[in-house]
Image (tube, rainbow, N blue to C red; front, side, top):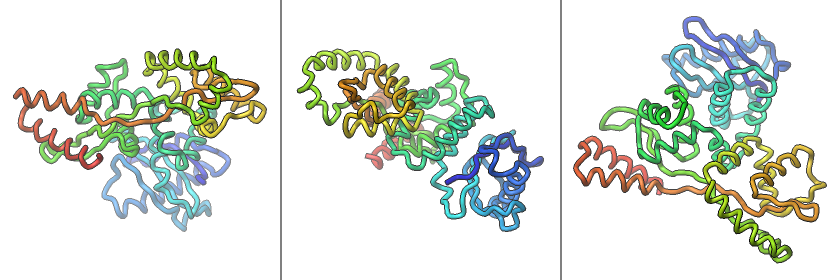
Length: 355
């Protein structure tokens, strides 16, 4: 289990300046800076310089605090770099926290790098839960983020794109002025979830982002819905009307649903509901509050002091077939360059590998 989450600003010529440490009672700021500095120097034996990315190191034996273990850090930016790090136990694999650290950096920056205890506690609990989260939960979680959804939307239209054009595409679709450095972090998360693929395009020698599959939330039938409808036949008409309503407002509904699932406890509750109805008396106050959110979303109903799932939200993926067809039509019309044709062939070979 991680011991400490910390954040720092770091200019290579000046060294790291600690901004945040949570929980604070585990280690002093001075001791953590000493450990972090020693670990950085240890890593620089193998690296010429630090670029944006994920780094791990063992806590050196000469560390003054007497603590032993591993350090995992994610560094972003080229100027005043932001460092997000974890101090881990000796036997913990630092690589299982890579996704959690990148996610926490995005969340931390989006919250204005606040040191508000409530925000830090939310980030800390998510980091602890992240390695054990199913893939579906991680995807639902990232879909709650507007920038992540915009990235997927842009790629759904373009198929493939370079980072600066992605930033322009996001700005054109929203009021958000996209930060290219932070976009790299979003793209790393989406690539890790199997939604995007990133590599150096051998034709243009530039880093390209390719869409490999588009995620969406689909509403399926719960396993026990037939038994429920047998007992409550009047529910059939309500479910039919709600299905039409959900389909007509699916994008807005998805945003609200994904935001509810930002709390890891919400997904755990949804998973339990998928197996069987849950008696109201078995739930904590927080779980009942989450059930109220599910009822507002029209996926849960309460009958005879039990909660029943009437729609089961699941993640599904689609091949970006329409985008492929659109690209092919442009090429067949003769309006695209040879470089564009070769890039399309590269994308098709990536899709072939995935499918």
